Image (tube, rainbow, N blue to C red):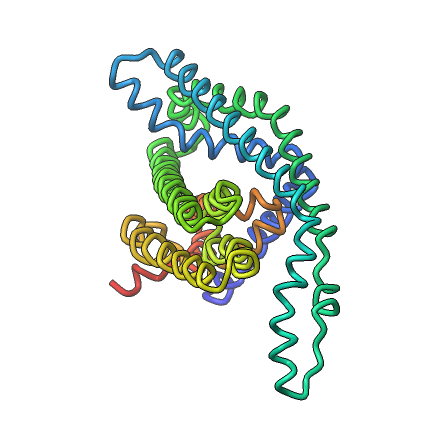
Length: 346
């Protein structure tokens, strides 16, 4: 009898895993449609607390959504325009960098003369191809230009989602076999994801401003560009802040000097230490319920499945998946594997 129960449970787990494979395969094949929808959904999570705040000030919800959407459109249009101008300036200066790189690498030639190594600045510079970087920048400029055309559609989707929020509890209760339990799980998912995204957005904004101020004070060019990069990549757990620091630190060492490079590198370490290792964990705490390994693996998995958007939203997507799996017997075992083991430790 016990063997039959174990076999049945194992079969349920296999069926659950097969269902997940089919769902993920569908997401992968329909990524062009699903990714903008998911991005709009999580943007609605970030903006909904602001709508609720305006509602407490007796602003009608429709008017509150209109005001917030207008504010977001103006802010994104300004930031995108500023970023496009900076990227164009960056693209124009790239061809000049090869000569500067050769000049800086001549110091390595002097050091190599003291050993048996034979290094040529021209030979070292041949491995650095500004044309490849220029191609990446050109593609990014084209992507941002096209994104402006889709911005209106994205925000319209967000606006309709925000207008639909008051009807969401009723719809979930009608769909669920156990209305009270189903709504509790959905509310827990909404609260967890909203809390994470709002706090992460605020920390990312402050991190981007701190990086911009550091680079502007140090005299590093394109400080706005690197500040925006720090803001965007701060959403990526574990490695995002490290990746954001690489380009400006290299630029500072090559084109500003050794002392400026040390200051910039030290500033990035301090910013990441304060925000990434102290403030971020203290505010978010262990409330996410995900293990560190799962957070890192989710970054790889969602990035493969949905591209850059999946990497940015890897943590909230994994939170939603974990909470969705918990109510079922087979899914609960998978949810336990995704968790941080806090219940067992208590």
